[in-house]
Image (cartoon, rainbow, N blue to C red; front, side):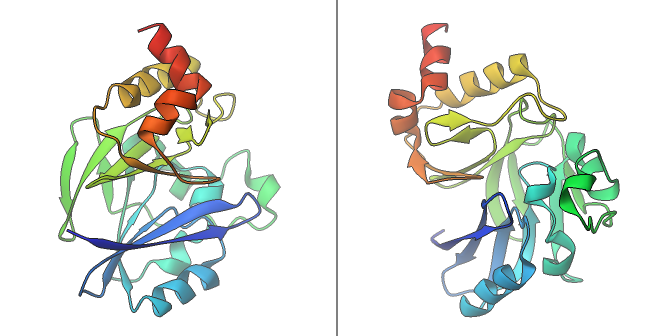
Length: 213
């Protein structure tokens, strides 16, 4: 399935919010509506798209704040079960936000470690559990498009010293990504897009993992 892909920078932390729209159809997937709902909804309007599905790579505030304003009554929201609490509870980062709109209604779908090949709202994709940045961090794979959230960046990785972070789990998640044989296009939660082969070659963290494999 071919997709039209748009990326909009949202919020004070310049989070990448991605919108995937299938050719010839009106439905779309929104990944990480982190803030600035007007910008996200304006982009959907420009794409002649409606949000069938919202996928969250993890539950940190800069990836979810516009969730409630972007979702509709027909939108399905999905997150890994280990990060589900970020939607329904406030946390220690609430004071950084100023006006935390949470609690939100719970997600419609909670992924577990048993989920890998998934079909939701007519979309076929893979859910790859990659804890380390948070307990419930995941990557989503649509064809050859890999959305890595705050697990893998261009030249770097997500922090492990924040709420839910764990160095050992991040190492295991990077080892998993490093073992993937296909050269996927990588769309991270922040900064610029890259490719998996480029990161295997140049990202010091993936090189570290490879050296100790």
